Length: 559
Image 1 (cartoon, rainbow, N blue to C red):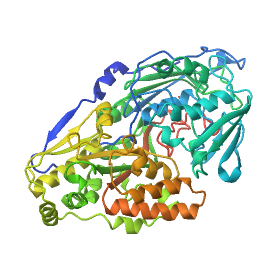
Image 2 (image 1 turned 90 degrees about the horizontal axis):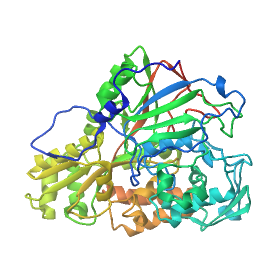
Image 3 (image 1 turned 90 degrees about the vertical axis):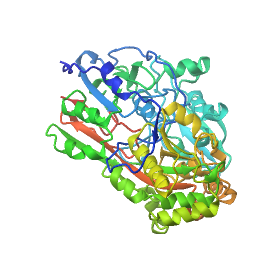
Image 4 (image 1 turned 120 degrees about the vertical axis):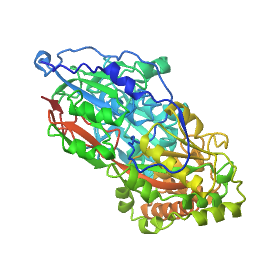
């Protein structure tokens, strides 16, 4: 019997998550209260709600009537924006897409990569520029179409051809062709060292999507163990087990229905776990860790994320185009203190664009990079502002997304600017859509600084190139810096098959960009979850989009 929920319904919960634009006109210092964080950065356009595609609850295994009818209620920090993997580029959407799509390759319970639609690892030829990918012959979409080489080719080529925000993840591909119905050959323009990570990608139905791209974003045809039933962009999503799932060697999911609901207000999210209205909540707020730990009916599971949160400067227009001004801003506040006040224990201080586990694996000079940022020194800040000729009547604008931690970082900087003597400082918290439009304009009218985050993959390229290369300006890089040589090094690093050469290029380029304060690194979050004791076999994953409900290593259940 499905358990009954408290009267606080989904629709009522949604009222707690409205993300409105708001401004903070700073007047003196703020207190040391803690804020709540989100997961990664959101990109991509908005879609419209629709009904998922599928064949209903059949009994392809001959035992459909005997399957468990368990329900799982999962509270996200934000709701999904898109469900088409070609355009999808935000964490909440990725968490839901991961249930209804199968990937060509997927992450294991760690950061290993395993085949799913692919039947084996790719064969690599021509000095790392040719990948031959075999496909499962029995893979099937929920409308009955077989998954073929043409579907995989469209999945890989469409972001490039349509110039989506994901294009830079795949734009090293020269050609992709079908050797036969179940084999794909991909030729690269250069030997891209992180290409196997790029192949961790949900496979779309090419013929259906090509007929109606917009419709596919709202009503996709998928091949995963769950099928989409209902969703509303930036709101909720409901998925149900697909009882005819093609890959049933490990049986079928114990969970019959998953409801994903956004609860942005942090205290409400924790309260809903305490009262039993939800089974899993993501992102435990720093000030509520003890509350969740003290809940005898729930526990916390967490894993350091593969992410990066940062302050970025408008290097294109306005006073922050001058590196002396950016250094003066660095002297205005203490990032160490801000992280201690508003992020810990939900996350950890980070001194580079690379998560610590990744940086240590590549032996990057973290100690050296950690010494670049300054301690708070208002006298030195004022001196540099004067030397740079900045008018103390200047109107500063710092934009932040709808996330408490990143807002508090912005407020800390704004307080520092006021303490130096600037009177006109605005920290503007924007809804995601507005923020994503503004931070890539490079316009002084839109921002001087912004705070943001990025959820990447276990290769330096997925952070350095996406966030700091001039080739991604106006897409995922809103700094518009003029350090041409450093940017060229990032391009060389992604095109080199030699790991040692890549390492040296990343070190030199990153050092230049940090010393000139294109970014000031801030923190990385733990991917943390509050989990009801009713839930079994669920654990946190280092990749924030990975909400693993049914895989070859786990099958979540709810009492």
